[in-house]
Image 1 (cartoon, rainbow, N blue to C red):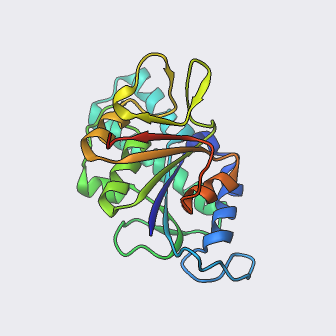
Image 2: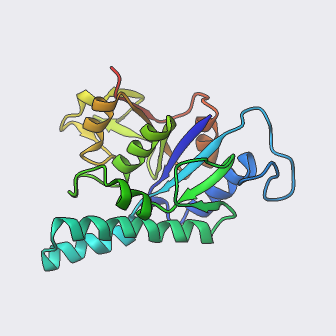
Length: 222
């Protein structure tokens, strides 16, 4: 089973705990947990962590606003922001690093995305496309379940958590935590996205196992 977990920049403080929990449960390129205990063999997974951009991509956005960068320069600077966040995530965990989406290791690995995206260049160079849509594209390429871990429980409408929503149903009444380009991408590619609160690591673990979890499923296939 393959799973893409996008860890948002909003979780920069909580990401070490979340990654530690995932590595303990699923390992990192081996069958042993970080603390030396055997990992459950109930569901062997290749779990690819896609970094958000967070404050690193925000720096590129600010530079664009101040100095009117070209679209290509702004795009690749933001991708390099994702690369910086990947460095942070690796520094704060025992997860292994990769810059490829081929031959994924069992367990947890962190994607350093710049080389892959530079070679493939699959998405428009606009600010509506952020790490959310990039993570969805990666999930599509490798046939993976797509989980977005962020700092809220999901998408809200009229101050109530929406447990399931079609990507075609986004309106102004939704309080959304996904980028503007993601709904259209999900619809065009028949992909769905499960949004969970990464401040609660057990929810993310349950989501990887496919168990019911508090959050929002954004469905691109209905």
